[in-house]
Amino acid sequence: MIKTCVIGHPILHSKSPLIHNYWIKEHGLDGSYKAVDVACENLESGIRDLVEKNYRGFNVTIPHKESVMNLCDDVDETAQQIGAVNTVVIEGGRLKGSNTDAFGFIENIRSHAPEFSFAAGSVVVLGSGGAAKAVVHGLLEHGAPEIFLVNRTKEKALILAESCLAPDKVSIIDWDERSKILEGAAMLVNTTSLGMDGQAALSIDLALLPRDALVTDIVYAPLHTELLKVAKNNGHKIITGIGMLLHQARPAFNAWYGVMPEVSAELEKMVQS
Image (cartoon, rainbow, N blue to C red; front, top):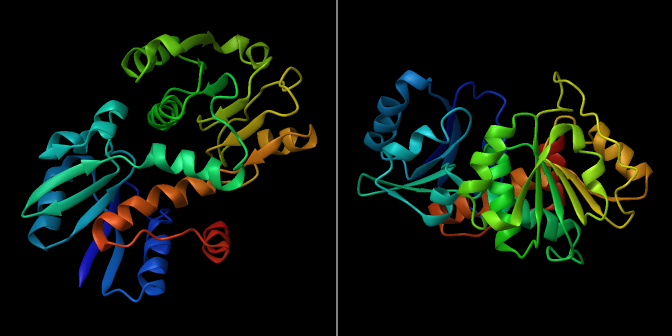
């Protein structure tokens, strides 16, 4: 049996076991995937335990995505660029780290808006945390000509911009200017926790955003955030965040089980419920 899991703290909320076990069953594989709660102070011993128990690999979620990099024997170029690891393959006791979040973001857009061109115009990205790093990486990789990075803490945005693939294509915008910078943009991406269940609302005026611009929110609880509801009412094409979660899981599953799974309508519905 090929054993895999996701580690984090807390971890009970994770939908990863549902996703991966669905694919294990769909493809008739002899495998298992579960959630393992690993506290920060137990990260090294927790990973060592997985190696000793002959796990094939594991996913990494909050708060370990950056810390786990120092415990990997190899980290691929994408993960190094993003500064975080969310997928680890164990081979001969060695840990090989990668990051599939940028892939997940791009594939979610492609699957729901296949006609969209990432080179169509500027992209406004709200936030500068780990998810924003992956989003910016994916956008630059796929030809975004200009990215306006808007964050409540300007210093954090500057660090992200300076370490990304093409710093010359990323401009830092004051949080108070977030509505004005939408003029002429081809896409708006929210990577902040604003608008998430239990969090403060995201306040932004979409009046200047062109009607043919795409709006996506990586938050998926709720699935349709207030940002997406307003955008839809304004006539914008919207994309929810659940697809990013589903698509980022595909290359991880492929690395462990040798099968590149697809995201079916049935699975998407299951994860949303």
